[in-house]
Length: 111
Image: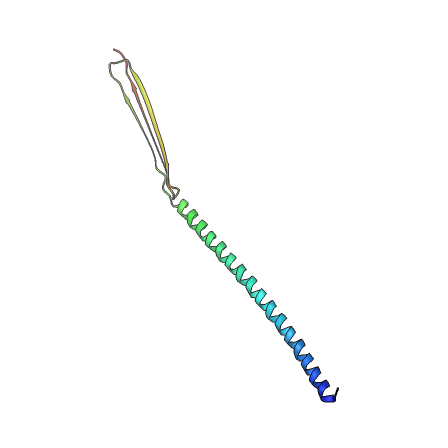
């Protein structure tokens, strides 16, 4: 081999090594960006879930609870006694709870 061919061979070998390191660097950069993108998407999903939970919790704190109790007693000349109790609980999707209890007692005393 001539002196010029040896120099060309060394230059070609140096360019090959530099190219190989360039390809490895590009692959590592692509893998890193892909991983960061995936983590960022997961973080966005977690933030959206947290926002929804906070919104639901805030909605539960601002609900209205109403309880009313009515009792009536009536006396007549018959000897029948009637007692009825009605209780209803309704829960909607916004976690609003309303409980209504109505009790009525009819007691009769014979006279």
